[in-house]
Length: 297
Image 1: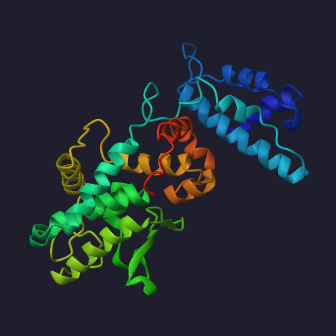
Image 2: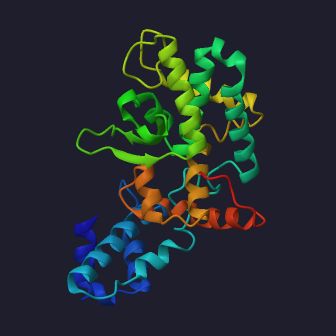
Image 3: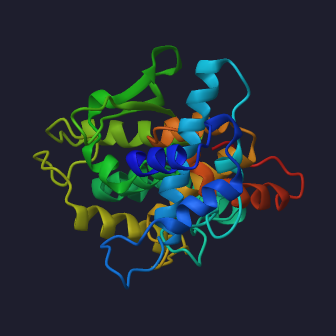
């Protein structure tokens, strides 16, 4: 990618500081689709998006080194179709996420589940509710929930051991983990589960084990169990799946004014551009709250 762009700039005597949107578009149109061949079409919108993100980073780095304002030509192209939604899971459909009302509904269900005396008889039900809680309240993926260890739960000793944040181990050994905050309501639910876990004498280091012996939760087991929680709460959406909880976490934080770089860091992204898919949705979500303060996510 970099070599092709560098050669294009050299051949056309283009400088990064004066590069225009038209210059970048011409470059993108000259790139053949992956696979090459005479019949190959131009790059797909998603692959063009990847080029634009890299070019935008290069322009910002160049400006930083020269001590000047960055050239926003690539950034401007990323804000408009066909690139604006090009890296979404489905190009023609925005990420599915829980609305503000559905979020409140789910939180109420989760809080009620730990207050229900019958819940104590089923440690798996308590585990499942807590797992959904950290997806919605902390933005974790199902895989991150399954990897989470007891040692990764960070507690406030002055608040009775209430979990206030989580350390999320990276699946990539070459990358450090991250830390994501938990709202108070999520901390209470997680604490209730951890107490039940200890009370049932469940072994192992996993925060959400599959069995009493501490066996790691499987992908299928986690998906089915947490999906059942949404069904019981009346919020089942097979197309949205569990990632609607992570999307809701991001969108509600952005709608509340949390800086993009913080939301990106909490989600485990390398840079703020990765939350670009949520920008328009966050604006809409913020406009539909009717001025009522949302429950803190």
